[in-house]
Length: 246
Image (cartoon, rainbow, N blue to C red; front, side, top):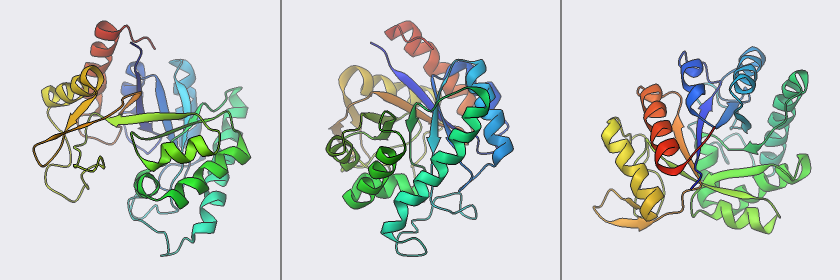
């Protein structure tokens, strides 16, 4: 069983280089919530060095809040979302072109990701952007969310993403970062959650129950305090328990 392990990268964290040996996909910030041209170049170089798939990590234009504030209707109109995503894809692709690299996928960041997971109109705008730019790009999105339905409607390959370092609510959404217990900070608990999602197709939720979930790629956050440790542990689990290879 092959499982992709992805991480959000190029956001100015000092741990990026230490994480790269353990992941198979990198979601690279395109400058709207973090990073700049120099960061993107360094991150693309690391991805090529470690044979890691390169993905774009587009966001709302929100460096002040690290892309974690939903700006729809509060500075960003719905009809602007497609253009915002295309602009970020163009920026990262231009840097990839310098190195003879190509993009593999798109994974929205932060508040844009969370909005798209529940809002079919925003998901449609993101899918439209990918279709216009390069319809061969995969869309990484929250497992079981409306993003998958919109991707199918637009003829895109959707990859169901699950999270190793975040907890879930009963509706399948991630627990908001502002809520208690949103982050998983214990390596044993992180691995237990991944094992349950991968082997059983289930995840425990904050109300004490379980919900079904489909795991095709596992995410860890590069800005997490335990990111390197989690990446190392999950790489070992996936490689030796499920034949996962970078």
